[in-house]
Length: 168
Image (cartoon, rainbow, N blue to C red; front, side):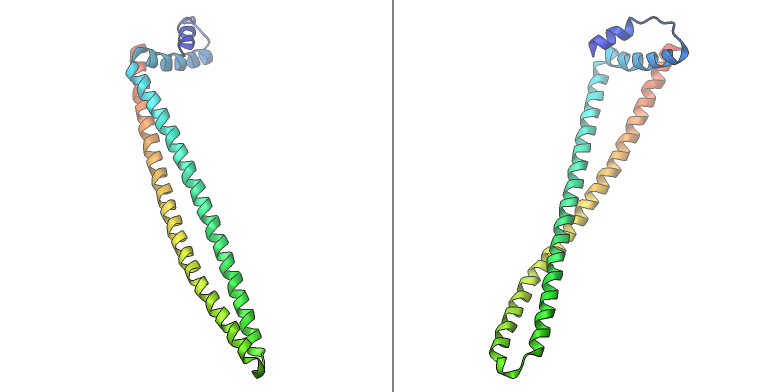
């Protein structure tokens, strides 16, 4: 970074307009870092905060996708079990009286499967709540990001105005 500042400050002051505007922008950013150690620290803190925010945003998105996949998998299992139960009930209705004992056993199995399905339903509801919470957190972070970017733009404009004042 110091080498770039040395190169930027050693360049001639007369240049074509397009090159001059690029050099001016580079000199402004270099001057800002060179003239004030505090600004350099602020800039580094902004970069760190922005990268941390992006990492958190990616983490939230990843969790959201994981939760969605788990919920979908559980819903698929619940649907399969429901279909199986419907088939078993249809078969039971078609059985004759001599098979009453077997029918009773199958009914007990159906009841046990229903008992197993109940916690799965609760788990699905819990995961949906977690998904909604993650989505709310994601949206909140997005709003926070927009506010931070707006603040950054305001600060950047103020800095550019102050530097243009010095160069005029």
